[in-house]
Amino acid sequence: MKKVAVFFAAGFEEVEAVTVVDLLRREEIETLIVSVTDELFVASARGILMKADISIKDIDFDTIDMIVLPGGLDGRNNLEACELLMEQIDRFHQQGKPLAAICAAPAILAKRGILNGIKACVYPTFESSLNGATILQEAAVWDGHIITGRGMGCSIDFALAIVAYFKGFAAADSLAEKIVYQ
Image 1 (tube, one colour):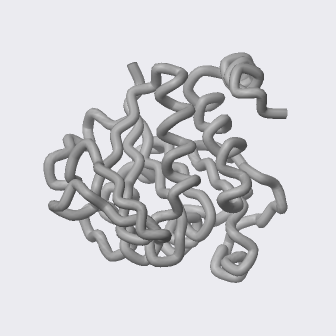
Image 2: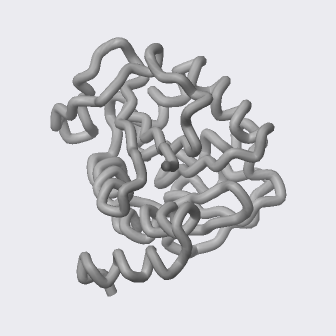
Image 3: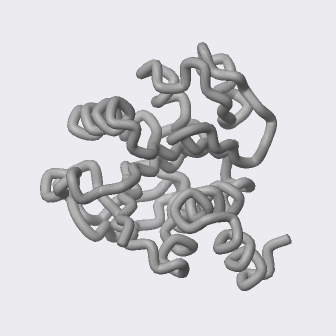
């Protein structure tokens, strides 16, 4: 079974994070909510306290098949401040393992040179930070081992792209139909 780690940092965008977790779990893709600190309770951008499954210090990255980064401005900044996470993002990219980021979070990948020559999308005010990427105005973009999403309103498209990555487009289409997504 594939295992995905969704990283929660203080200030994360709730809908982007929880939509991914919800839809992947519906498809029986093992999905861990990972706190980037020792604290399992993480406050979202709007002050909703969410409990992570595990702390980053306790995760075995060798068992993880994909890293997912939700957005939110403070969330993005706090993700980027986590050295261990940044090291693992670089390692995943070097190994060709999948990375997914939505809203402001694709800027983290761009800053690390991961989006050079890649088609990607990002929240509109962060487009100038995607140096080297071909920026598309789509809800979600999948290019190679990288999936990006534009923002909160694109969360379902982003999560469905991750489902398609692991289980194929038929599974993603079936899930979209089950949740009455058009």
